[in-house]
Image 1 (cartoon, rainbow, N blue to C red):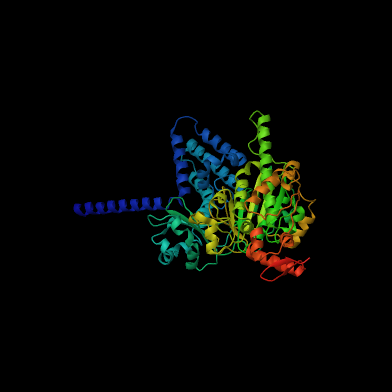
Image 2: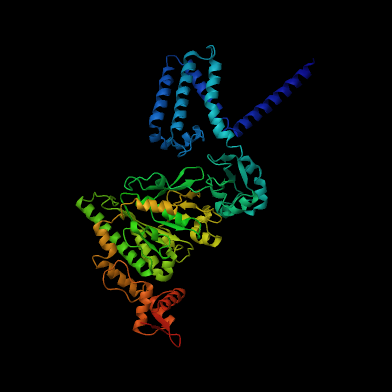
Length: 621
């Protein structure tokens, strides 16, 4: 063999070796997430060999620290996990981490990490004491590696790239058919299976340069169309960077049947003073959708599940030992009427009653603010900043059903009154829940009021969804195409759109629940007096101010009452004074034209009014 040939062969072998080494490095870096157990095992082995070369019995340190750390993690892991959340989220397999991600709030998570720490410390100690010359050390290492790596690979790699790949493989079709996603691509490690669902997948998508979530958030239905999925199957939310988005795909309904309210199957009292976190439904991965009780707008079309959400909330509130509920239902009590026996005040079903209730509620807020101020002065400035609720001083929740109807008849001043209450009520444990089928910029769209409210959005058409969600549409919030009972929640704790299905209470379950209540949860004496007008002064003075601003009819009772005369009585009283045309009656009362026509027809049927010449109406009695 010539010298020249040997030199050439060595050169080719060197080039091949360098190419292969580079290929290995590139592959190792590309699949660094999948090979994480290999890197951890290599790091522990190197640490043990270094310890073997160090003189002394230093191998005792990992032998003691590893098991002790494992026991500490298993016993107290949930307490100190928060600062190490990102690290723990990496080491704990996704299939174990179905609680709060990166927080050791489940037994299986703590057990896995405890075993990993104990075995890792033991492996370093064995290598530090004996090195690699011990008989069977390689076999032992291999068994330990498979024991700890298999769960990690199964949950973090195999399950991530299983069914989800069918959506990732077809993503180029989305980039062709949906203009907003042109130039986007699914990240190599950006496919994750949603635990507890059938084929549920989250794709981490990198957008074209210069695009953000605001450019693609409203295109979720188009993505569902490309994949030929059911309505509401796709939601889009912000990703890790401005250029990334998370596309959440649920090809099958993860809930299917109705979900029974937890307190129906297992009635039990609870306290808002201990926890005001209320489960209001079930997320797509099977976990509870927790809602921190605060001001909330509930919006949804007829039949979308909005009323069921309100009834679910009522079950939680009326089961509490320190909550009281009042309400106004502008649909003649269609939703809240069945619950009136459990309310702390008569249900308001007319504009006048509702305004009077809101005026009283504002007085309650002022009264409770005074209690807080008195408490601080008595404590030398050290009193609580927020009212402490108790059975003697309950959390007051006001539910206003069909709020836009109240605004339509009561005027803009109603929105201002509700806005004032919402701004000042937080510290006094007074909460507003505003419900609507069709929100507009006049009521739910008010910027000042929206700033005080969270939002639970059920199914809406495109225009209603745009009005209700406003700028949040740019973050993926849209109610178009949501299935019945499914909603999106946005508040301080929820800023990523996630579908949840609310609990459903049947009429029979509602009747059984109400029969089991001991009666209405009463307010404290001071709040009740101001809400119901028993002290006569502040409530009526404020009502007169609103009256002068044409929010309510000019003819109002002058004595303290809990419920005012009906709209028909007011129209009949005006007709008894003098004949009037519908236009004159509308001007005097502030009622809408359709409302006035209905009232006159009802009065005519009852024989209390009749038509006269020239478009006039007169009192018939």
